[in-house]
Length: 459
Image (cartoon, rainbow, N blue to C red; front, side, top):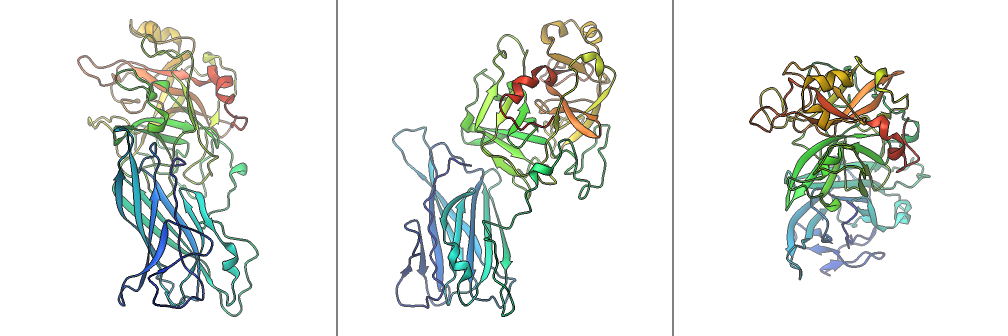
């Protein structure tokens, strides 16, 4: 979340022994954090402060830090971070909301105090002093990470020993930046490929719950309604910067477009109730681009949108792009073929959303077959849509699956051709009617428009 601004200062000077002073400042940082001597039992603790902007949300507060310390006798205890409180700050405008974040830092060794060498808030470096990582005597290097999610009211803390020195250890030749990361091989990760080295179960059909990692391009979209964060739609990652979804996902029940700052994009999500599981990336969009021909009040034609992410994402087992359709866009080439769609939408038991995503195989039908099936379809279809489904009342995307992908396997790669757009409703309800076909936005018709937002799209 780039909109958070923090003034976070950690103290700790390698080689400084306990003195009677109440506070110890860091020589290369100012304000926002101090070590405070509490008593003989607790000894030294660190208390820090961070301030949010008026547009930020508490859905994804992340604090990272590295520190250099004297050799650790027990590596089971590497220190801890904990958020103590959020205080809402009053502003002149009633609709502006800012929070003061107060958090606590504890270290396993207090004499001498460790040296904090790197601090970041939501991935943005706040303070850096790498020279202390190579002090003499050689220190152990530790990284701590704290993530807070207001949606679940949970704090998740992890710690890792980056480097343990002893008399035979050769000093590192590369600086460790931030928490330990896997090697970023994003440029070598091909589109439309599942990480078979870590995922052993193939894609399953017939509306069955999928295994995590088998749909790494499946994205979830959330939005705020006042202070409440709720799930809205599915979407598809097609590159390190672009997500494709339905345009109607960004309009509320009053047909008003949702503000960009109220939208959250979650990559790698599996459990809908756990948006911040290990392996997910939670981002605020850089821009939301609804197709200019989309007019929700009069028609659902051109029901497609492209979300540009604020920075290139790193591909992992759980986060990978689908390929963008690059074949002929003639619908006849896919009629009677079966594609796969997945999402967290309403299930056969009547649950409005499912906790884990399900997938189903859908056959594509001709325009003639779709138009003849119901008198409404001529009003909600166009040359930029196609229809798919079984019309058996049981299998197909439903409420909550909007914006999700319809992918086809092409040359061993899963390729995006459709975006779940709309369906007819069951009489007297707002529920999808799976006795009728589902309308898909034809991604192939919008390929040039989609790729105009980035040169790095997987085709």
